[in-house]
Amino acid sequence: MERSFVSIALFAALIAALGLLPKVTLAAGVPITAQSLGVMLCGTVLGARRGALAALLFVALVALGLPLLAGGRGGLGLFVSPTAGFIIGFPIAAFVAGWFTERLRSFPVFWAASLGAAFGGILALYLFGVAGMALTLDKSFGEAAILAAPFLPGDAIKAVLAGSITATLARARPDSVLSRV
Amino acid sequence: MAMLSLTSEQVTPYHRWPAGPKLLAVCIVTAVMFSAGSIILSGIACLLLFGLYAVPGRAFLREGVRGFRVLWPFLALIALWHGITGTPLAGVGVALQLLAAVGFANLVTMTSRLDDLADAVTRAASPLRRLGVRPHRFGLALALVVRFTPVLGARGAQLAEAWRARAPRRVGWQVLAPLALAAIDDADHVAEALRARGGIDASKE
Image (tube, rainbow over all chains, first blue to last red; front, top):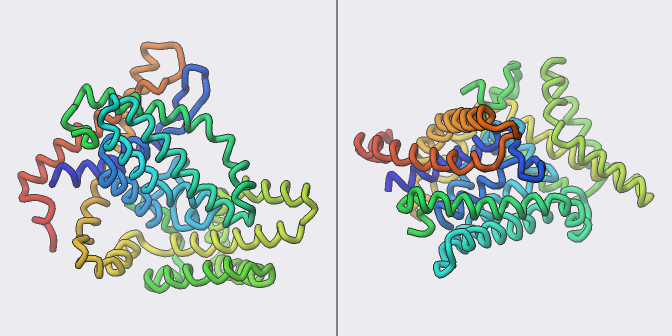
C-alpha cells in the first residue's frame, strides 16, 4: 500500500529529474533528452496502472504550474500548445508500456519491456502527440505526422534503453519491478 | 516552493480572483476559439489578451511575453508552411489562435498560487470520492514529488560527475539505470518511514 503509493510519487519525481539532467549521449554521439524515457520506465517498471498514475501525477503537477518539463517548462499554456498531445499522452503511454510488459510474461524482461516501451512510448504517444499537433496547427493528421517523424529514431533508441534498464533493475531488485512481480 | 513554481512575483489584480473560475473561463474561451476557428475572433482575443497583460505594468508584460517562448519554433514553422503553400491568411489565423490560447492559459498559471490551483482541482475531483479516489492523497504525493525531484536530480548530477572522472567520453546512457535504482531504493525507505508513522492516511486533516 505505502510502497505502491510512494513508488508512484518517486517515479513522477524521476521523470522530472530526468528533465534536469544534462543531455546524455549515445554511442554514436547523438544527444537525447531522457524525459520520455522516464515515462516509458514508469510503465515498464511499475506496470500499467501504477505507471499510468505516476505519469498522470507528473502531468498534473506540470499543469498546476511546476516547471518540471525539460528546460524548466510548465504551466497551463503547454496544454494548448502544439506539443500538448505529447504531454497529455504521457499517462496513456505509460499504461500501454506497462500493459505489454505485464502481459508478455513468457518473454525475457528486456524484450517485453522494449516492446512495451515501443508500443506505449512511441505508438500510443505519437497518436496523441500528432493528433494534438494536427488540431493546434490546423493541419491534417498525415501532415502533422511528417512534422513529428524526425523524432522517431531517437524514441526508438529510448525504447530499447527502457528495455535494457528495466532488465537491469529486474536483476538488481527483482521485488521492486512491480510489472513482473 | 516559490522558487519552484511559475507564479509571477508581480502583484496584479488577477491574483485576487479565485482560481476555479479563472480555470473554467480559460477552458471556455479556448474551446470556443478552437471550434469557431475564426480569424476575427482570435484577433479580438489577442487584443484583449494584450490589454490584460499590459494593465499590471511593464514588468508583468515582459514576463508574459517570455511565456510564449515555447511557441516561437512553431510560429516559424507555420510561417514557412503557409508561405510555401501560398495561404498566408490561414497561417495568420492559426498563429493568432495559438497565441491567444497559450496566452490565456499562461495568464492563469502566472496569477494563481500553486496551492489555490491544487485546492480548486481537489474540490473539482471530490465527487470522485465515491469511485474510490482519495483526493487528499494528492497533497502528499505532490509534497513527495517536490521533495524528491531535486534529490534525484542531484543523484543524477553525481553519477554524471563520477562518469566524467573515469571516462574522457561524454556522459552516456549507462548512468540512467543506477539513477532509476536510486528512485526504487528511496521509495522503499520512504514507504517504510510512512508505515512507521501510521500510513498514508494517518496525517489527513
